[in-house]
Length: 57
Image (cartoon, rainbow, N blue to C red):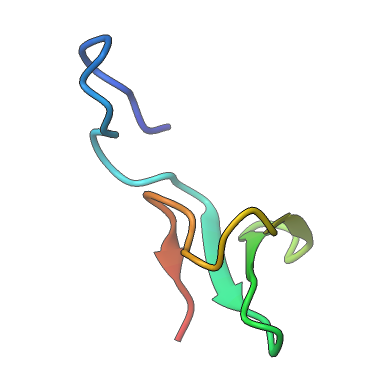
């Protein structure tokens, strides 16, 4: 798993493992579990991608 390091650093050290993300047709980003392929979370607060999660090609 990714670690957060120093408190108040406001950044992640390393990537989130076993997760990927893809963009829907509406422009929202969806996080997917690599083991099962299930969608986990949709980011509706803004149309920016999740931090630290790799993007699918």
